Length: 456
Image 1 (cartoon, rainbow, N blue to C red):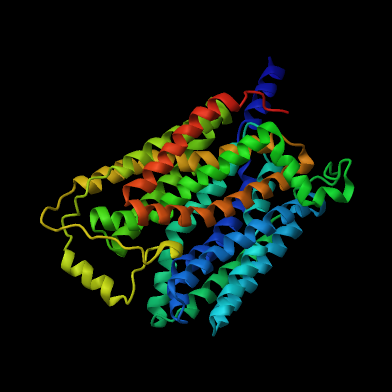
Image 2: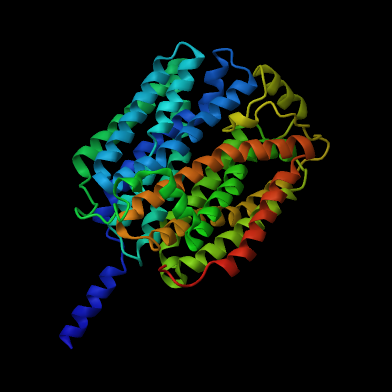
């Protein structure tokens, strides 16, 4: 009887996330992301202060994800060979250098250089995901990876607030937030150095039969061609096209439908961030243990599809405090049209709603629609990444998560371009409707293509 209780306690312990191992990497990611999220909302204004035109600002917005697309898979593979800790430190040092270059910039080309340095060394998240995979088992991995997503939510809630404070205290000096971001980056390096032990096993299956060839692009393409791996990587790319497009086009959409200015949109973004934190920080663990990763992926695709379609049909009823004249003056006084976080699609023509009929209906509709959208977006990335790690060997986890991170970066570069073109050509409804229908089609395809077997 006593032995049975011991076995039962051991089994229960294996089903729980070991927060002593998870907390250091979670805090490192939060601190790291605060630096990034302080900078993201300011980049269009920073570039405009150097005389950049909208096309150049769009290129600047794409510089980070494109260079990260190149760098993340390689650094992920290196982490399989040399360990997580040194690669994480190298990528964090690159981020710190990028922020310092940004802070000292006195020309537009230096802004590009800063973002490219940060992007090419930007394997921070992929390496942190590999650390999570090292210290979790199959029952706790989805919850552990979900905490990385929760760190994103926390960063995107707090970062813009810190940027606002830095600008207020410095008299709108755009260099100061860059140095604040650098300070957070330095703090994350210190935390990694002092708090994070190496988690990768000393013996690595990484070389396989290919030895050094495992580091090549061909090895990554071979991984993508594997039936189940290819499907999951395709899903993670497409869901980020939809969810990333939602995030980057949302402020344009709410301007056109609800007459919300930057302050109103900030509240909306905080609402979405809180929902994502709740899902990825608290709910995804119990859900993954109860239903499994495969069903969570289905749930994520379905809820994201429903949410995006609902958002696309948001009634054009501006909020009660809306004034068309005041908002027009606000936009004109800014010198050019700017969105909250979307450099690629700024200067898109938007017709402001009439203020003859205002009310709460439109705002209420979109807030309700954001609940399934945030649930779907919060579920998909950690669930798909968890499934990927269970379909490769231990020595390949860092590499496959690096490929996943690279595809996310590629999606982040593509989403605002595709969504902005649809918005410009066909109006505000079409991008969200198209993204929602794509997710619905992927849901139907996933039911058929994702097999229950967890191992290849």
